[in-house]
Image (cartoon, rainbow, N blue to C red; front, top):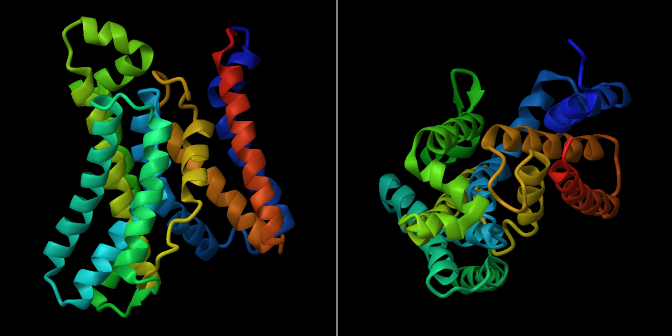
Length: 312
């Protein structure tokens, strides 16, 4: 059987790239492959990785969500405010996730009912949610939480950091939804041809709105992890996260045009971004150059997406 290298690289290039970078970094830094560092990389990745899972749903429909970082910030501020008010932990979790869902719902309704392009809607929400965070916190961090809440971002479950458990659980749940449910099938269909879906009698607006709610929920879950881990919720939390999130999804093989991709690719894409971030820190690369590398990754991800669209 003849090996089709071009097709292999097209389908699994991201996996090869991931292992290649891991091998290179293992030679450049003796610290990189230490178990503590590996756990630290995945723990850090879990924060925006969970958000990337939600973003996968949005991009599969041909949309985009630029507000994830700001939704994280405001949801985290809500959690911190309730913690300082000595609210019940269950209430805090429900309120935080509910806030993320509400902001995601607003995005979805403006896109579907208001018929405004996702880029414009979520760009506006990015500004609105950040402003709400500044108003709620008065521009200052809210910090100092109890051990029960701090377990979310700093605890372990059977020796595995709890954020990693949440990340993997989110990926599995999303995979089940996308492959085994009506929502998943319609998500792909909307990204493939929304007009055909609508003419088939399917309420495409409902399903399209739901994916933005999912994106808001995953942002809120990440907010809980980040706030817990830092023991603080600040007005600048999540700034720039949307870049890593979108890059993880696109690098992972989900087409910006919609209709093709999945969460397992997003998982690898998120880990790749996490490994690159960690490697630059270990090698002492200036933060200014780190932003340059991230920008090139974004452009490269879009170019890769275009190449995937070409027939083999």
